[in-house]
Length: 112
Ligand code: FES
Image (cartoon, rainbow, N blue to C red; front, top):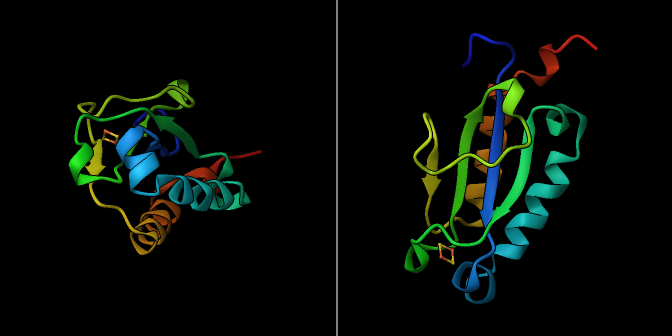
């Protein structure tokens, strides 16, 4: 996705008061955390939390965004190029997102 190297992504789960307390985003975060710990994603998907995307009534919300290798680990903004804010994410949706990231992410192409 970038010219600078393998594709890497950020996955930010909203832990704001509505997504987190009322809509169970903590379970989505745990699901993503377990998946991102696996070798096929660990080096190319950064998992973080964001406290509110301002779309609370559509939650739980998850942002997926491509990031340049030199920005890996930094939180992208919802308006950054290629970023997609997913609304009303279910565990099945998260599984689909993680499967797409496995296919799209370039971590397995990184020479170690
Ligand atoms: S609490 Fe998740 S978007 Fe506001």
